[in-house]
Image 1 (cartoon, helix red, strand yellow):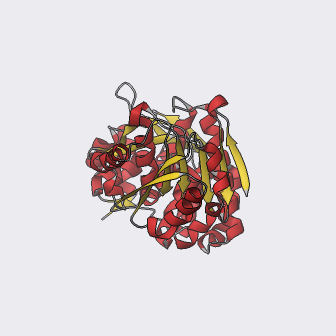
Image 2 (cartoon, one colour):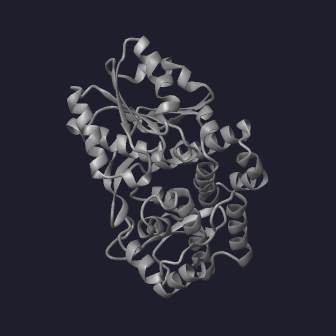
Image 3 (tube, one colour):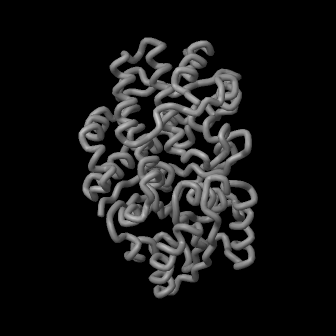
Length: 361
């Protein structure tokens, strides 16, 4: 097991990464304020891992309430969130009850937002079961739900007390979900960690083949990058926005097509190509740099072109992005490979051109 710490002073918390961690309730129990937990999962993950997590906790005297939700991005809504609140109230869960999220990014965001708002905030633990959640969404305290007009537009910052990333759960992860997670892994190399990017270029085949050592290293290196950024800028008032490389374009894809049509990582991959193309148009990247980005994403089995929604529709959806300030769209772009920047320098004509060159019917 590898352990990292997210340095947030009194609210610091560990990230445990390794195999067989669901079999170690002693890693979770010290982070429960009282022996009571609400375990939130979905219909896909619960049959695989819920008993594995809940049974040993119950054997140690923890009262566990199980909350099983439907699976999919399209369920990241108020209606599904209310099902969590209903269960918490019906089971008389108090302010000291810990909410545990067992699943991917959707479950983590829903359970986290419920924890942030139920009785004005209860403790929260993340047990991510997808690559994307293990390398990104489980770390940093972002929680929330989608709105038909924009992804993750309603939410709160609510840090977990623990992140428990059991790499064994990746054995049951569908290939498409594994590839989607790699988009977020590649992001770290592009925005701030060139040596990691070079490692990814040399080892992408091992990751796709689910080599345990390679996956563990990629998860750890990604979490190191994420935790350093979160410690420096918890509420995304500055440098943390760099983690959104490709996301402004990607969120437009998800909202424009309908949530769940493309996986989040797939949309981020296509959005990353648009951001790199725009960076090239600004004179920051060379043609060879753009091709390098496209090649790695393509080798990861990810889409490198977006759906043809039309530039006008992209811009309409992107105007709702959380990085818009004083009516001006700020984008995460690449000054060079390995260094991201948050910039409002791009003209609309260049943004349109980047979208149109990277989207096909």
